[in-house]
Image (cartoon, rainbow, N blue to C red; front, side, top):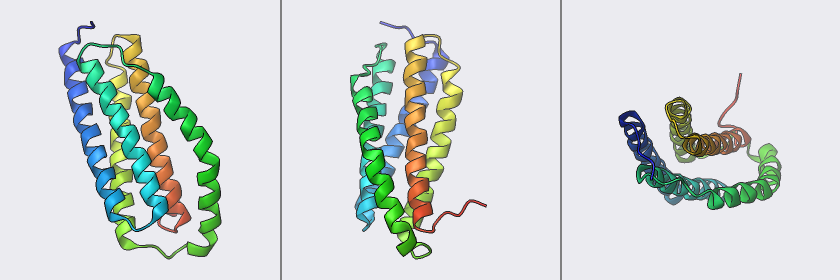
Length: 164
C-alpha cells in the first residue's frame, strides 16, 4: 500500500473529476451525434476515460495500477488506426466544408476538454514520487493526446478545423 502525499491526493482527486467529466461529455456526445464515425470516436474515448478513472481510483486506494487493460487498449488502437485513417481520408473530399453544427459544437467542446486535461496530466506527473504512478499518469496523458488527435482529424476531415 502506497501512502500518498497531501498534494498527490489533491491532484488525483482533481484528475478523477476531470475523468468523470470526460466520460460524461463523451457519453452525451455519442448520444447526440447522428454521425456513426463521430459516435465511434466518442464511444471509444469514453471507454478509455473509464479505464483512466479506474486507474486513478486504484492510485487513490494506494495500489499500483494494473496495466494489462492499458496495454490491450494500445494494441486495439494500433489495429484500428489504419481503418480509421482510411475511412476519414475517403470522406474528406466529399464532405469538406459541409458539416453538422451540432457535431461541430460537440467536437469543439471535447477537444477543448482534452487540451485542458492533457495539460493537467503533464503538470501532475512531475509531482509524484512513485515511478509506477508517474508511468501510469504518463500513459493516461498519452491517451488523452490521442483522443484529441482523433477529434482533430475528424474535424479536419469534415472541414471543421483548418490549421493556419
